[in-house]
Length: 203
Ligand code: PRP
Image 1: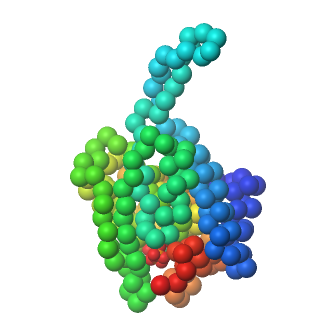
Image 2 (image 1 turned 60 degrees about the vertical axis):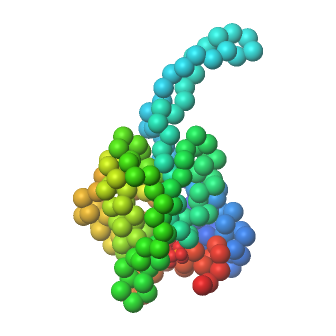
Image 3 (image 1 turned 90 degrees about the vertical axis):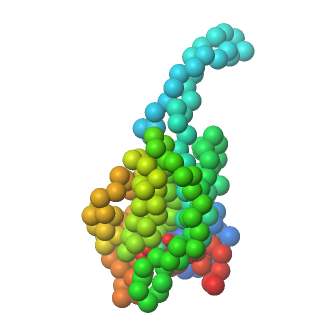
């Protein structure tokens, strides 16, 4: 859990039904920067020599830049801010849409490197509701040999956290909030509605 006044203020803007899509996207972008900053706190670095204008010194760089994987559509709004913090990273894409009858994810895009051995991966999706979408996405990544998956989300429901914890996948979850529950349509309560629709409009 990232517990910070500025993160809480951005999250409040995202929850507010009166927030227009432009302000919603801005709040998501700023919150993503804060969440990815916290999620990368323990990233290994390597030392190398540089010169300042005054003298030689030693500096650091990220040893193995993580692969970033936004989950379409809603994760798209997190892609650019994450890449801004990790400019050396490359990006894969997974497209998932939740079937609103079965609540299970339907995959329509998988664009990932075939081998993710020894490569950390950061998955970006604002919402963990039932956890089905993130479980599917993380399984695709683990099947390619990854043993270090960080899911960065804005909101998680306890039901989704339990499902991901039981999935037996090598993942950790970084979130700005654990909300109360899911309603009978499997929407997060209090939540923020549909993060894809609120950024890009209804389908
Ligand atoms: C939302 C959200 C997650 C998923 C969460 O996407 O962005 O990917 O639902 O639900 P789950 O945890 O129950 O699987 P949605 O399927 O609405 O697609 P969208 O991003 O295109 O709006």
